[in-house]
Length: 137
Image 1 (cartoon, one colour):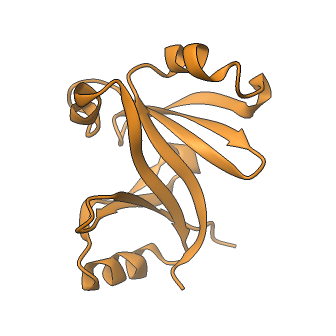
Image 2 (tube, helix red, strand yellow; image 1 turned 30 degrees about the horizontal axis):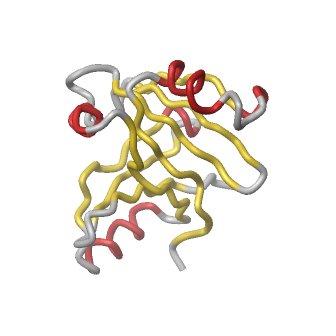
């Protein structure tokens, strides 16, 4: 089995602070909302909202050169990806490729995950999956 757990659900928003103020402060307690983290490699800001049984990642593009900028231009916010943690990222990408999924973002370190590598794949269903390298013991 490649997937060890679902890590989070990613939602793209235009402005993290405004989105939280307008939509989430009445749903989640303040201590459930993490800090906004800037990731220059992903060209985005991210913020994690923690619940007992899961996590949501809000993703905001840095600007027009961000990979998610076109997404946010089409609608004000929306589901973007599901992130799964995998034991061996390279093996997971190989298996995805063998099963017809296309790697749309090659592995790179992510600031939000203590520089563990991430990659994105998409299949015929056009759903985007983020693969997160598991922590090494």
